[in-house]
Length: 460
Image 1 (tube, rainbow, N blue to C red):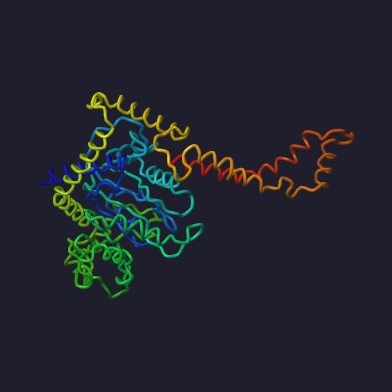
Image 2 (image 1 turned 135 degrees about the vertical axis):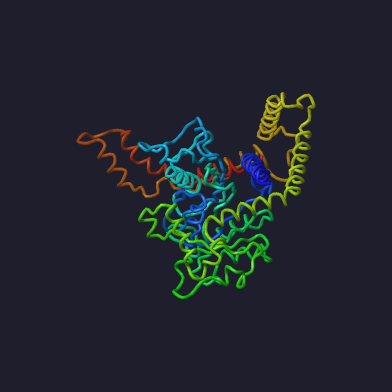
C-alpha cells in the first residue's frame, strides 16, 4: 500500500508540473498541503525541520513573498550522482556536502543544487526577479523539488506569513493581499491546511486557524501545528489543545519544538535541534505520556499518511476533471479544422498553420480588411491611428516648449558656447544644451501613447 501511495504522489507531482507549465494552477485542483501561519509563528522552522536542511530565507518582515511549492521526494541512499549542471560545496567531502540530497527548480531545468545555501540564495534571487526588491508579494509560485533519503514524500505549499502593518515600501493593503493569496490556496477542496500557531500566544488570536475555519468550518481538512511549546509560561502547558478539548480538529493538533533565534544565530544544527526536541517531549512531565504523538518526526509521518489517503480519496474526482479538460482541449483543437493535421507527427505543421492564420488575422485587423470590423466604435488600426493623431497629438499641443527657458538662459548658453569669440549663428552646442531638457517634456505623453497602443494591440 505504501508503494501505491508513493506512486500516486509521483503522478500528482508530475500533473502539478504539467499543469503549472501549461494551463496554469487554477485549472486543476490537486491534493497538496498548504502551510499557513503568521509572521514569527515558526512556520519556516517547521518546514526546515521536516526537510532536515536550512534552505529557506530568513529575515525581518515578510521573507516568503511568493508561494513556494515544495515537493519532497524520497530517494535511496547513495544513489547515483545525476549528470548535469551541478552546484557543489567547494573543498567539502561528499559525505559532508550531502551528495545524496539535492534540490531542483522548475525555472532552471537540468540543474541540481547540492549546496542548500545555494538553494536559499536561488529562492531569494527568483523572488526578487518577479516580486521586486521591496517587501511586496506576488502570486506566481516557485517550484522546488528536494530529493533526499531522509524525507518522506510530501507536497507542501509555503505561503507568505500573515502581517497586519506594512513596513518600508510595502503597499498599504499588504494584509489584504496576503489574506487573499492564502485564501486562494486553502479554499480549494483538495488542499489540506497546515495551520501553524505559536503555543505562547492565546489560540483565539491565531490568524492561521481563523482563516482555516473560514474555508473549513467543520475542521475536516485542517491539521493544527503548535510551535514554541518550550516558551510557554512556567507551570502552564498545551495539553488541552493537543488533546482537542479546546479547538477540535478532525486531523488533530501536533506539538513541535523548533530552534530559537539564538540557536539559529549560534549555528545549532537541525540534527541537534531534532534530538533536543525528542528529549524535550520525553522528559517533560506534561508531554512525556504523549511523546510518541508529538515532534517533527511524527508530524512528517502524519502528513505523509494524510496526504496519501487524501489523494486516494480524491482520485476519482481528479480523473473526472482531467477527462473533462482533455475533452475541452480536443474540442478546441478540432475547431481549428483541417483533419489532415491530426496526429502527433503533424503537430509542427499544425502549430505553423495556426501561427500563420493568427498573423494573417492580426494584420487584417490592423489594415482594416478584417471581416469582423465593428461599426459601433474604432478598433484595430483605426484606433491606433486615432491614438497617434488625436490623443498623442493633443498631448503634444498642450506642451509649452519654452517652459523654464528664458531669453536670458538662451543668451547665456550662446555666450558660454562661443567663448571669447562672437558668433553670427546659434552654435550647435548651445542648441543641444537648450533642447535636451525640453525633450524630456515629451517623455510622459509618449509613454502614455505607447501604453494605449499596447492595450489596443492586446485587444486585437
